[in-house]
Length: 405
Ligand SMILES: [Zn+2]
Image: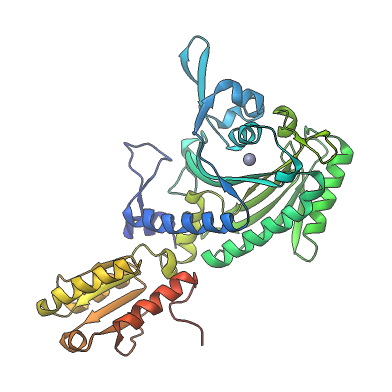
């Protein structure tokens, strides 16, 4: 069976060392290179849709998480506070929202600034029981792709539509195949903040946004602070989890006393929309490793091109080509040790998208014989054309190794 833990080991993507601790994996260079490419993509997608990025620390004073409600509602999932002195305790945060509320509150806000979209790929911690931890899919240190939009009540609908567009774009680029959409609503038994009319309005609004999308309603699955849309994935073992989420929140703006000045000069309460396009980097990669069986699209493959000099005489030319490929922005390696057949097999084992074979004729002609992952061999091409081909697929964030058509 496909298992991201086994593939993660075979492809040197990450390691879980008992000395580092359960649920605290370390990303190795290959895994880190893939993650870096994905993070850059997501940051750029967010930047183009008007998000502003911030950095905030993964721990904060106990009082911050008392105010946010996390210590009241969520303490069982948090690590115990660290006592620094009799009246000073800090906690590892279980979510980024409290810090982002402080970003909104850092100065007075006007209606002209709304919707204000604050984004961060930030660290947070969950005290998961050791029995449920495994590989990257359940961890205790989480790197979340997160953002909070602060908007006027009448902007919420458009904002949710835009977030869904971004989620679809990210899924298409990464090769994520959603298993279903879920609308989580109030249940009869739960404890919820906000009044009935507010909830009914928000639930209707999300139903409206989902018109034309196949989804299931999940009564009782809403957060205590508002309804949400979750987008589910299923892993190779058949376990379902949430990869993308959009949550409306009536509660934190109250708790943090957030307000903006409206066009008539009055003070108004913004609505807070929590959203994650692709979830945590850990769970995302647990899924991507399995869904692609380790053969990532070229744009986030750890190494995109391996150059194979046929003999020692081509070693210098291969090194020179590697320098040019690096300058062209590609992740490239030269593999010169051992038989050519053995090196081709090793590149296949590592799921390298492109192999460039360099014999004496190719060196003399300034060409490269390209082989694609999967075994297909192309006729030798001018080196500049090879770089343009690979760079084109990378820039287009294509799932295939050759342009369509
Ligand atoms: Zn949040």
